[in-house]
Picture 1 (cartoon, rainbow, N blue to C red):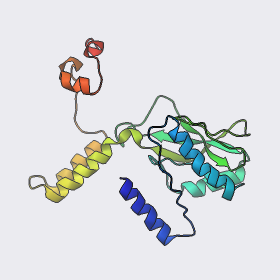
Picture 2 (picture 1 turned 120 degrees about the horizontal axis):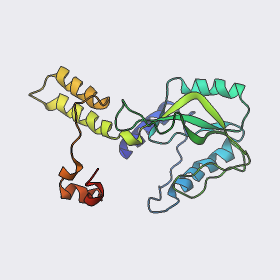
Picture 3 (picture 1 turned 135 degrees about the horizontal axis):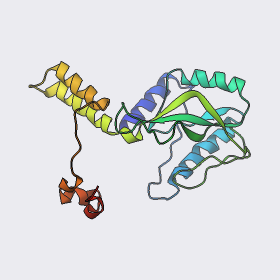
Picture 4 (picture 1 turned 30 degrees about the vertical axis):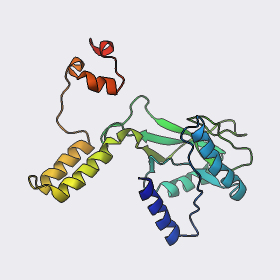
Length: 214
């Protein structure tokens, strides 16, 4: 996936050299504060080159909805805060289900004006810090979080492989199979958790006694 990402970035920079800047930095996987340190790397570039502009942070597992940038620009023209929490929706398991823990979710301070005093803590889930005291709410656009539906990417690969090689299923059947998985419509049922083989439970660090009576 990293190779595909780099190829796409190179393509964009070749087509639009005036619109893209690639900041290369090795991600410190073993460092406890790797996430915050990585964010501070691009934040440093922004503070040196784009002070006063607004920045929208999108993680690699997030997608901004259609017309998102235009809607955000229109929103900023009418709102004066220095930072905003971005509306976010989390796919859970499939493209047909989402997190319902809260009525609405927001990603803290993902939209902000670039100033000299900004920084991220060196922790796993850093939140932007700066002179702004509070962040407003931006519902003009939505970030779609895809980290918890990785299953659908596997289904996509299987579908494409079957379409290319299968000699027992029709293309229409395979499309229906794919969509049923994509949108959580595939027929399924619950069963007793105690029936799961011990080797599977051990792999996922599940204590069988803990769930025996569930």
